[in-house]
Every structure is written in C-alpha cells, then in structure tokens.
Figure 1 (cartoon, each protein chain N blue to C red):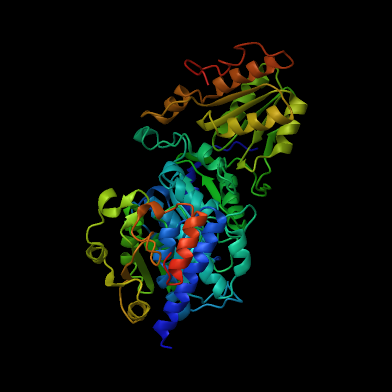
Figure 2 (cartoon, rainbow over the protein chains, first blue to last red):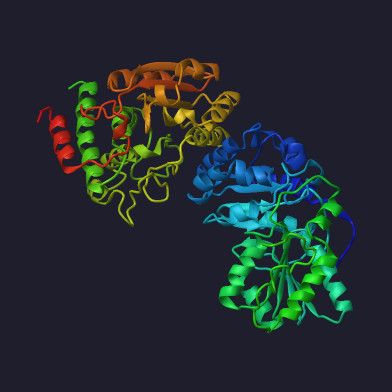
Amino acid sequence: MNMKQKGMPQRQVFGEMVAELGASNNRMVVLDADVSSSTQTKHFAARFPDRFFNMGICEANMVSVAAGLAACGFIPLASSFALFISMRAGEQVRAQVAHPRLNVKLIGGYAGLSDFADGASHQSVEDLAVMRAMPNMTILSPSDIVTTRLAIRVMLEYDGPVFLRLSRDSVTEDYPADQAFRIGQAITVREGADLSIVATGPMVRLAIEASELLAAKGLSVRVIDMHTIKPLDHDSLDRAACETGAIVTVEEHSRLGGLGGAVCEAVCERTPVPVVRIGIPDRFGETGRYPELLARMGLSAGNIAAAGEKAFNAKGKKPAMSRYVNASVSGKNQTL
Amino acid sequence: MADSEKLAAECLSMRRTLVEMIHNAGSGHTGGSLSCVEIVWTLYSHVLRYRADEPDWPDRDRFILSKGHAAPTLYATLAEKGFCDPVLMVSTFRCLDSMFQGHPDMRKVPGIEMSTGSLGMGISVGVGMALAARLSRRDYRVFILVGDGELQEGQNWEALQAAAKYRLDRLTVIIDKNGVQLDGTTDDIMPSGNIAAKLNAFGLDVRECDGHDCSALLSAFNWACSEGKSPRAIVAATVKGKGIPFMEGDHTWHGKTISQQDYELATLALRGERA
C-alpha cells in the first residue's frame, strides 16, 4: 500500500464516481433526503436531473420508493446519513429491501464520528450492528479513494441489497489503481506473523500506523482491510488466527455488533485466539474536533498498538477472569 | 347476468374460500380480508392489465396490497385468475414451507408485486413504481390498497406528498374504510377524521364510493383511469367482516381463529341460510 497523503472527502469520491457511472448506466437512479449537498449526490443530480429524486426529509418513504423502483428493474441508490438509513428507515430497509432481496443500494454517509461537530444526534455508531443483523444484506465499508470507487462499481454489478458505509472525512489514495476488489474478500495490506490487525473503513490507515509502531518494538503485524463487513471473509480470518495467533479489530463504530462483534463471533467458533476490539465504547458520540474525538474514543494508532501488545501477550495463555475485560487500553469505563 | 351481478356472485364464492382458508390455517385476518373482497376482485376482473401466464410482463399494471394482512383475498383472487394453485392455497396457507405465507411474499407467489405486512409502506412503493413507469416510458398504472386504520402510520403521508410532488397521475390509492382496527373502532383508537378531505389536501383527486357495490367500484375505477393531472384516491366505505353477520363491524374478528362452530355458522351465512 502506497501511503500518499493527498486526500479527498470520501463523500466527494462517492458523489463524483456515481455521477461518472450514471453516464453509462441508465438504470441507475439516485434518491436523496434533502442532504444531497452533504452526501454529494448533487453531482449526479446536476448531470441526470430526470434520474434524481429529492424525496425531502422523509427517509422512510425514500427507502420504500427505492424498493418500488428496484421492483421495476431500476438500480436505485438511496442516500442519506448512515444513522437515518439504518435506523430512521430501518424497518423499511428490513421489510422492503432486505426481506424481498431487492436491488436497492443504501448509501450511509457521515458514518461513525465523521460528522464530528454536529455531535451525538448525527454520529452513527450503531449502523453496522443494525444492518448486519438483517438477512440478505451486504455491507461494504471501503477505506481509501481507490477502494471506494471499486466498492461502488462492485455494488452496482451485484444484484441485491447493499449498504455502503461512507465517511464525511478525507480518505487518501492508498491502493494501486489495479487493486483487486471482491465482495467478501478482505485485502491483506501487510503480511505479518505475530498478530493481525483487522480494520474497516478509514480506520485501516490508523491500523497501518499502529503496525509501524509495533514493528519498532519488534512485532511483525499483519494488517487486513475488511472492506466487506457482511458477508465476512472467514478464510482471511481463519488464516490470521492460525498463522498469527492474535487479532485486534478496529472500527469507527460501537464495539458492540460491528466488525469487532462479527470477528469475535467467527473466531470464537472457528479458530479461537485472543481478540481485542478497538472501537467506540458503549456510549454515544459528542461534539469535538475530529482527531481529538477519535482519540477520546480510543481510535488512535497508539491505542491500537497497545491493544496489539495486549493481544500478543495473551496468546497461548489460559483465560483468567478479567484478563480481557479492560483489554482495550484507552479504556476508562470500557467494560464491554 | 349483468357484470355487477356476476361480480357479486363471484365475491360471495370468494368469501367462502377465504373463510375456509383461514379456518384451515387456524389463524389469519378474517375481518379485513372480507372488507376488501369487492375492491380486489373488481380490480382484477375489469381494471388491471396483466398476464397470469407471464406475471413479470413489464407493461402490466401493478397492484400493491399495502394492508398485507388481507393476503387471503389477494391469494384467492390470484388463484382464481390463474396465477397460482387454488387447492394448494387452501390446504397450505400459513403452513411451514408454503408459498402462501401469512403475509404476501413477492418472492413466493407469482403476481405479488411487493412483500407487505408491516403497515404504512405500500403507497411509497407505489410511488417508486409509478416513477419507474415514467422513467421507462411505460404506461402501466399503479393501484395501492390501504386500510383506514393503516393510514395512522405517518409514512403514508410522506408518500402522498411525493405522489403529489411528482404528479403521479397513473397512481391510485384505494382506502378500505371499514372503520375498525385490531383494538377497536378507528374512532376509539385513533380517529381518522375526514379521510377524503385529508387526501384532497395532500394533492389527490378523491372520490368516495360504496366498497361493496361492484358497479360503484367500477365507475370509481373508470374515473381513476381517466385522463387527469393528479394522483387519485378512492375512499371505499366498507364493513369489516362483510358477509358474515356475526363478524360484521366486530373488531375481535380482526385476527381471531375461526373455530369449527364459527366456521359452520359462517358457511351457512354465506349460503344465505341461518343456523
């Protein structure tokens, strides 16, 4: 992975890509719920006004309308903030997208804490848990500019419900342009033998930084970009567990029910090894500047590296009470 | 026989099928299935354009049963029109592995345009289908059947705003106004007010009619299919449990099991006899 520093907001990558693809795919239609300037569907709206529907501040209606369009052969992208898509319209997603397996693409923008200044009401810390519980749902959470574009392409080629999780914040161009990208197939960003860090979305970058901190301490760390949260790449996790013996998960989402939860479910049944989850504690977000807010929630390279050492040191030891309870280090009050 | 007399006779036969189906299953929504028999049957007999042997025909009209608990009425109509097997329907409704699920599943029964059951979502889906018709330059129409209790769900009104915004003149919302919901009358539980006036205020052209009079329904549907610039609404006054005197207007028959004794009484009532 090439760590170029030139960044672009992930929402802008999405908005421009969707407008570009709209030219060659006239089945694509885009719906937004009065946040097209925020989610950047405005680019598509400007180029294809006949195929853009601003449904107003009615996310529930928007998702059901998208289901109707999909049932008639169109490929609707229903776009809003991740928490409105997953929760305000959660039951519409369940009843009319997931259950009938309709070809609706749900675009969850402003995910995690990336709407940092707006505070808890706008920050989406539960969307992965909600969407992951729904049968038939595919969940993509790309990390950089290249994989965001690739995720949009494969999402449109795939016939079925997809939730695409996007950050408001900048991502960089980290992967080569010819990067392979398949739904359900994680990307091993770096090889390593002592432990694995499994990250998703823009947190992959922090995972790489953490792996460098750990390398300085003599640990060889595998970094895995789990860009598909569902279906989860069990093969990649099996190899990480068997070959490196310890796993740290990193996500800009609650530690409950998201990537960390999914990895624990898989690893504990298939290949039990120590897993330490780095993510937002079981609490709501708050207002703050983005880096300081992320750090407050334990999402920093230093904290990930410390979790890595904990996981590494726990390898091969018999479980003892409380060993893992406060394993994620930043940890005050992280009892879950 | 005049069309309306023929339709009435067919509706009576359908009521027998519904009662048998729900009785066999040991559960189901009798009251709300009986209230919309004439509406659904008239639509499929004289209004909707479809091909039972080609259920995915792109130019077919779309019917969405937003009040999905009236699934027996839709199943019985589809079976009668050749979409599915009537014997299998009566014998397997609500059984494990049956295509005839408790609420309509578009992936299981040919002719079902959208899976429904959770209330308040059908008009939105219809808006999406009507937008799709316009985008693909097809001239099919979209009809959505909504319960009057169901109108309590806020999403209906979100959808009606959108139907008006996009001037979906080929979309028709039909309200099965039976005045009764699961827990009691709509007046007691959550008064609907003047539904026709509300729909009109949301930008729809509205007509009211007797929802059990097939000729009145036919004339309302003809009006809905005439040229216009706005989405249409038909508020059809109905009786929950229609056709079976001891069920009529009684909210406890929203979803009660039909016992053997009640089944026999209902069968007699549908033959025009009394116990």
